[in-house]
Image 1: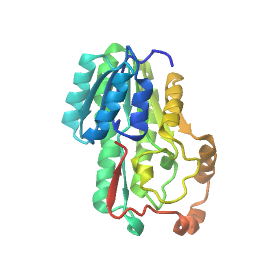
Image 2: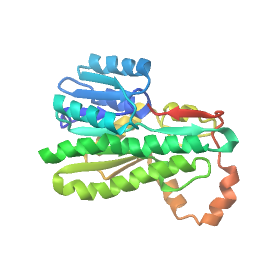
Image 3: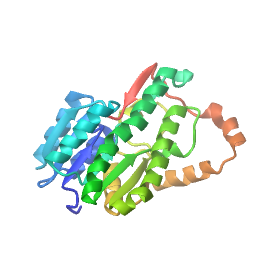
Image 4: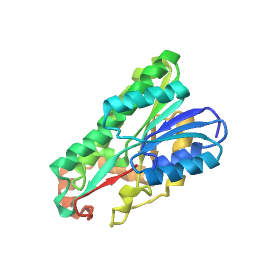
Length: 263
């Protein structure tokens, strides 16, 4: 990996992809700002990254609080001008056969959509002044089509993906790179709650390497694994009536009324 990233901010960094990305970028000469909601897990990631030589700041944060996030991101940028911000924090819901409850739907949008905006907006303001920087928005392969097993999760990730796609062109004249990350099934607290087969399941450290490579190459969409890309491509052009027929066979999460977090 090149040393083009000297100050990296990652939300949802206490587990899953966020933790794996923090460990991947950790090295001497790099300042990491990592955050999450679980202090014990976040402290473990902090210690690992510090042992790798990075200068690490770890904070417990709620990304849904706009004022808190503005103050946090601004403060981090003052400590070390941010070269890369990864808005990774996200949640899903598992409610057995009943789907997502109204309360969970609102929590999902608050974290997965508003939380992303709360993270990147103050970073973009700072990067625009410098005329350089990079922001990455973590969406999902689930963003390509609404699935009856998780409509709010799919919709929230679709909003992130589409917004990131448009933002990439909008911020290019300001010297700011924008990338959208669409992983398939990756080892995380979200996938830990799934008791159905997950095709092309990937460990988080492997996913982090793929993401980092895509970021260095400034790929607009970083979607993986490739076999899942092909399946999703076919799904995108599948007529709705076919999906309606198959809906009853799509597996649902079975964790009773629980909310699962990527951070």
